[in-house]
Image (tube, rainbow, N blue to C red; front, top):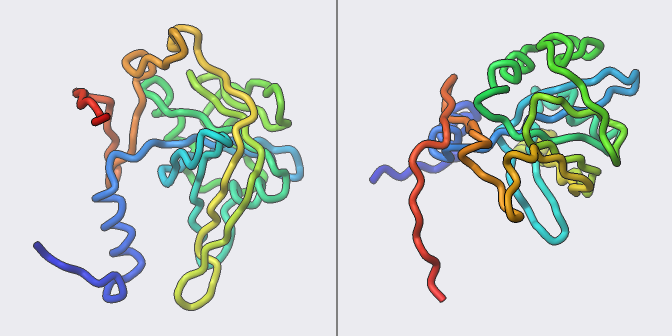
Length: 203
């Protein structure tokens, strides 16, 4: 087995190590509003559950040369956002939103996604998602690199409302086969749900 000290690697090498080994990664498609009320949308695969009580989700938004991305800046200013689960039916359009557009242009419009009004937050979601979760900011933690410069915004969002396609939700459980979630691999690769198996947890 090869042993590697991350201190000996460049930022790019560490990034490649992470995205090649932490797989598959769930993808959050996040909508947020600019101060000019423009609907922003972007996918993030540094995303996961933090806690169910309270209901907290996390999104890590990497900075570029210390500059916040639109999503992090919007969420910090507005305190609200919407997370959508990516699936086989919406991933092509969602991938289009990863293009680098000016802050005054909406990725939602560019990808021809359909906005839908939220119930408890001011930020709209998109109709194409089978699951969307309205969130309010619980906390934002700015992670600094070894030189002390801001490198990442870790956003903790409290879920305040769920929207789930009725066909997916049965007896309080979500049918993964009908959801058809898509997850991120390395490079330009994605993965489908694929084969599953069951292991009973010990008492």
